[in-house]
Amino acid sequence: MNDALLGNVLDMVRECTCREAFLLIIALTVRHCLTYKAMLDIFRVLNILFGTKYFPTSKAGIWNTLNLKSSTFKRHAYCNVCHRSLGRSDDLREGEGGGVVEEEDGGVLCPCGERFRSRRKLKYFITLDLKRQLERFLHRPGVFRLTQYRLTRRKINALALEDIFDGAEFRKLQQQAHLSPHDFTYLFSTDGFKLTRSSDLSAWPVYVKLNEVPPHLRQTTVFLAVL
Ligand SMILES: [Zn+2]
Image (cartoon, rainbow, N blue to C red; front, side, top):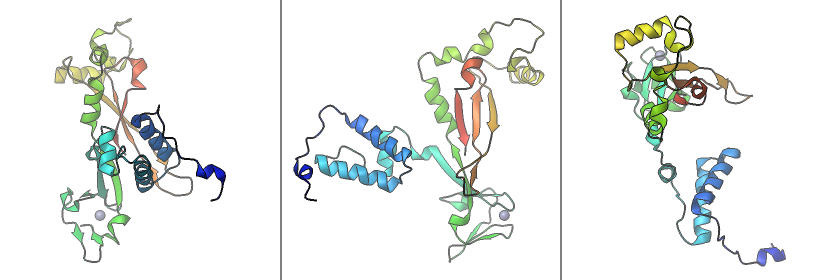
């Protein structure tokens, strides 16, 4: 600690906004898989160095700054034996199966008889607020016009299957539901992947694609519904 460099007085940055510094720390957190706690501690240290609370120091503060709400994500527990939904992770009684028993020693008993030693042993899936994602997407300038592709596309061969709209099932849906320019249809898909090479933990994200945008945009206009 006697290095001469350490004796220099810090010259606080002049041309860096809080936004840039905030995003740098977020990027660092993601890049090195830091915990929430580590990230919040970095922000705390910066606030101390600058003598002002420039950065959020709580989880809720981070979500607010990112203009997201943590309520966008909901964690649901399920029984991996009978596949019954056991309810939201913060309130197991909300589960559709009902009858979930939380024991005094922290164990959880599924109505099928399967016992989990603690809440941490339960399996979970996460749902994301699809409505909110779509709202944010549709609020972008020019996006509504793009979503009119179903009605404005130029068909080349009247008998050919040129797009999903030409399929028998889609045409049946169109007739039954009387789809208007304000109605959208979606394509759901899923594909599993392992979270880490060494564990057997896997995730099966459910992606949602909007059929109403032009084909070249469908691969990039993807929403995440379930994880
Ligand atoms: Zn069960």
